[in-house]
Image (cartoon, helix red, strand yellow):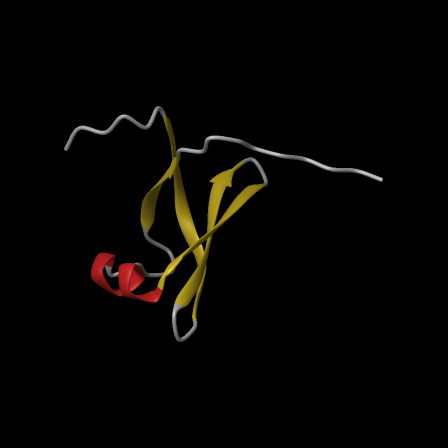
Length: 69
């Protein structure tokens, strides 16, 4: 499979919380870094995402924002 996404991070699934429509997947990237992805519950089921397995996180965004007061 070829993708245009250049930001591919490898990690291990820490937690999967499935809701009716969306699921929250936490991935340990190592060195204390954790990233959380919100995807459809259908996608989690189709990919058969399970805690403890290796997974790739692909990041493709037109903007990344930070705010601080």
